[in-house]
Picture: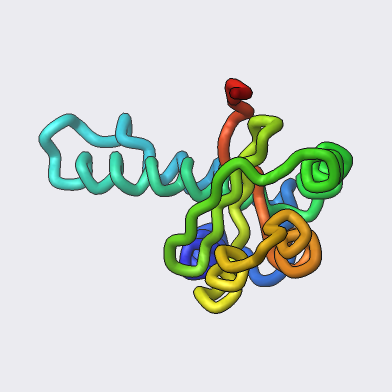
Amino acid sequence: MKRINKYKKLFNVEDEIDLKQLKTNYRNLVKRWHPDKFQEGEEGYIQAEIKSKEIIDGYHFLVSIAPQTKTENLEAYTKTISESVIYDFQHKGNVLEISFLDGTTYEYFGVNKAIYIRLINSAKQNRFAKRNIYNSFLYRKSKKDIEFQRV
């Protein structure tokens, strides 16, 4: 959640993410912090490089969790969580990353350690995740689809 709040603050987003406004804010920030505005070796050059990378990462991240993006990808997400099974998962902070056998990976934000431990200890992890995680937490598709070799 810290990452979400950090990027919302950077892009001046109050509540729900509006993609049109986000794109406008992104362009303005990139114009302001683009490294080409500084000469290499100048004091602001390194700071501009760091800030521009943060802006680009933040933009892509906020686009991936925007309601419009989630609506557009809902069919594929529903297919994944209903037809595929969990291949692997890991928990860091309050972010649970679940990889599925169909090759997709999703991040779920706000998943505390107690829920993660219950997932680990569950005899039927897919069923537990369907009931307690998939539609209960903010999520985003985090990685490109990869192919898993079935053994």
